[in-house]
Image 1 (cartoon, rainbow, N blue to C red):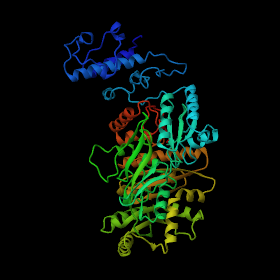
Image 2: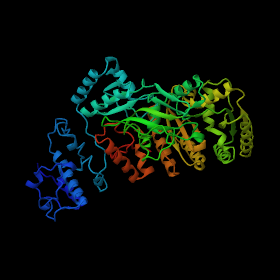
Image 3: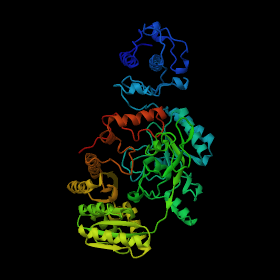
Image 4: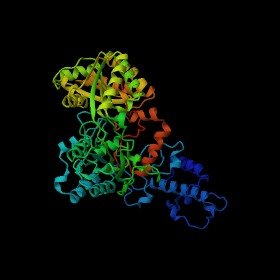
Length: 605
C-alpha cells in the first residue's frame, strides 16, 4: 500500500494524540497490527518496534498503543479492493476491523472519540450498498416475509417516502416492508445491516419535516403502522404498554370505552403514533399543564438497535435512580439511534374541563394576559391556553366548518380543569385579568358539544386554513421562544410575511411560547418566497434565545439550524453518540444531524 500525504498527515495527528511517534513508512507500516484491544498481549511490550521508547508498563501507555494500532488498521482498510461504484468492499473483513467510511479529507470515520476531539472532520459515515446489494436485500426480505407485506410498487414507495404537507427534498424508498412484531423488526434490521441499505421507520406519516423520506442510495421503509396493539393496561399503577404504531387518540378512546378514568395527555396532530411521538419529542395543546414527551410520560421503551439487539430501557417503576436515563436517549432522536417497537406510557386522571374564549385587540395583550393568569393561584387549573390570530379566526369562518361564525380578532381559547367549584373560581380570575388586558369578548362554551367543536377546530387548523384558500398549498413550521418574547416574534413575523405578500395563519401554545405559522402558496415563485420566510423566522426565534422547533422536530428541514442553536460542541456530542450506536449510519440517515455540505440548506433571502 502506498502511503499518501493525507494518510501520513492523519497518522501524524493520531500519534500526537496518543503520545507516540509515527512509525517509519515501509516494512513496519505493513506489519499486521490488529485493531482489537483484546489482541494486545498481557505482557509488557518492548516498544523498540513502535516508537523506540522504554517498555510500556502502564495501562495508559497500552491504550495509546491501541489507538495507534487501530488507526493504522483503519488506514490499511483504505487500500481494500474497491468496486465499480467506488464503495469500499468490507463485507469479507471481520466486523471489528471494518471502517464505515473514509472521508474525502482522509480522516477515518467510526474511530476513537479522541480523534474527533481534534481538528479531524466529524461528518457521519456515508457509504452504502450498491444497487446490486439493494436488490439482494429485497430478495431476502421477500424470503423472510409473506408477499403481501413486502412491496416495490412505485406508488407505494412514493407514498411512504414523501408527504403532501412537506416541501423538503425527498426520495422514494426501494422497498416497503410491514412489520407486526419486535422480532420482525430485528429481521429487517439485520438484512439492512448485511447489505448496508439504510432503514427508515414509518407509521403515522404526520411528520412535517421530512422524517420518513427515502434515501437516494436506496432504502428500506419499515412500515410499523399495523403494530398498533395495546398490550397491557395497569389501571392500578396508572400505566399502559402498547406497540409503537398505536395512535394517541385510539389509546384514549380505548381507555374511555373501558370505563378507565385515565388518559394519556400528550396530544400532537391527529393521527400521530407513539413511535413518532417519541422520535420527535412531541407535545401538544396540553403542554402548558402536562409538559412534553421529554417529561416522564414514557416510562420505558423497547428498542431495536442498529446491531439487531433488543433492549428495554427500564422497568415500570414511576422513578428510578439506577444509572442514567436511557429512555431519554431515544426521545427526540428521530429514529436515528434505534427503532422503538413498544412503549410503556404513564397515564393521568381525567379531570372535568370547561372551554373559555377571550378575544383581544392584539397578540401582545393576549400573551400578557396568559402570563399573568399562569402566575396566579389558579394557574394550575389551566390545561390549555391556545392563541389563534385574526387570520386564523377568519379562515375558520370561511372554511365553513363551524355552525356559527366567530368575531375576527386575536383570540385565546382556554381549557380550565378541576372541580366545578374550582372551575368557576378560575374562570372569574381569568375574566378579570383578561378585562385588564383589553379583552372585548369573553364567553364559556355553553355545552360540551360546543366545547368539543371549538377544540376540534383548533386541532384541525391546517384543514381550516386550506379550506379557506382553495387551490393553495401550505407550508407549516413551528418555533418556540421564552413566553415574554412571543408577542415580539409574532408581530415581526406577521410584518415580514405581509411585506413578502404571503398569506398565512398563526396558531400557538401561548402558555409555553410555541407557535405554528401556516404559510400559503400556489406556485413555485411563492414556494421560494415561503422557504425564505421560514428561514428568517427560525433565525429570528433563535436570536430571541428560542428554538428552531418546539414540537415538529428537526428531520431534514431544520438540520442546518442546530449548530446556531445548540453550539458546535453539543452537535458534535450528538454525532459522537450516533457514531457509537450506529457506526454504519444506517438508521434514518440524513435526518437530525447537520451535514458538512456547504450548499446544504441554502436559501435565497
